[in-house]
Image 1 (cartoon, one colour):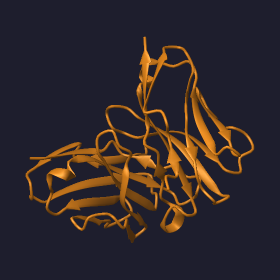
Image 2 (tube, one colour):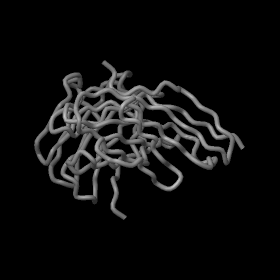
Image 3 (cartoon, one colour):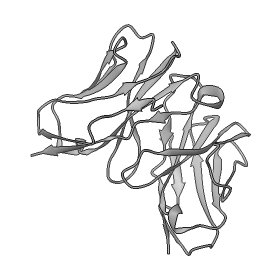
Image 4 (cartoon, chains in turn yellow, blue):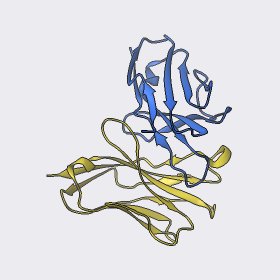
Length: 118
Length: 113
């Protein structure tokens, strides 16, 4: 069963507007972590934001915030005031204690390609 | 700045000719990972090390091997590259906590002729 689902293969957003990238996850482990990464065309994966399953508040990092709805098992990334440099692939990922040996493994979604329009 | 470095950034090899990709880190993380990423796909974990303990994913082909001679360095050896092995290879490191993010290198793009 797929553990991370990103239903939007591609998204467009106007420069300076906000955009939400969807991510739903599936786990029976009460302890897990959710991560968002950005991958520009250059290929490097850049860590953006982290949300722990026990965190009481939604994570925020600058223009990035995570809309964490635990009961719905969703962890949507919100990018405010989009910039041209935000055009990239965005991956949602999860780590839980069932991920693999020592729970180090990240399970990635298929990604969403975001294009920012001037 | 502490970082993850991969060399080379671009590698061209011939069908069946062994190739080695390298990764080094200055973060002193005890976990290192190798991922394969094909175009428009998510990264696929090939194997990871916790210190010197090697963990191979069940579906990683035998054609792929890895070495970690010390904390800082990790190598990916492809013994007989096939056309299907052309991909981006990403190295990453992390500490071992559930909340610890993985830090990725810039990747090596492998072309097989």
